[in-house]
Amino acid sequence: MALSGAIANTEAISTTGTEKILMARLPVGYRPKKTVNRVMAGSGTAIFNMEIDPTGEIYMARYRGATTSFTYAAVQFVGAWLNVGTTFLGRISDGNRYGTIFN
Image (cartoon, rainbow, N blue to C red; front, side, top):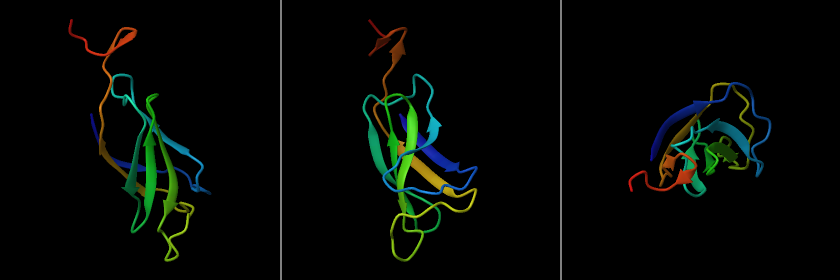
C-alpha cells in the first residue's frame, strides 16, 4: 500500500510528547499487516512520529522542531500541515480471513 498527502489539524493540539494523538483511520482493506512507524515532516522545519496500527488508526506523537530548541512542541495553530507519506505491506481481507483472495 502507498499512503501520501497531508492531514491538517482542526483544533490546537496542546501536547505532542510521547502521548499518541489520533489523526485518521484507514478503511478495512487498506490497513498494514504490522505497526508502521515513520518520521514525517510537519509544518515548517518541524517533524513528528507517525504510527499506523493494524487496526487502521493513524497516530502522531513527538511533534518537535517548531522552535529553535527542537524540543517537543504544541501545534498551536489550526491548519498545520502534517505530511504523511509511506508504503507498507497491507493485508487483504476476504470475508473473515486475512491473506490472499486467490485459492
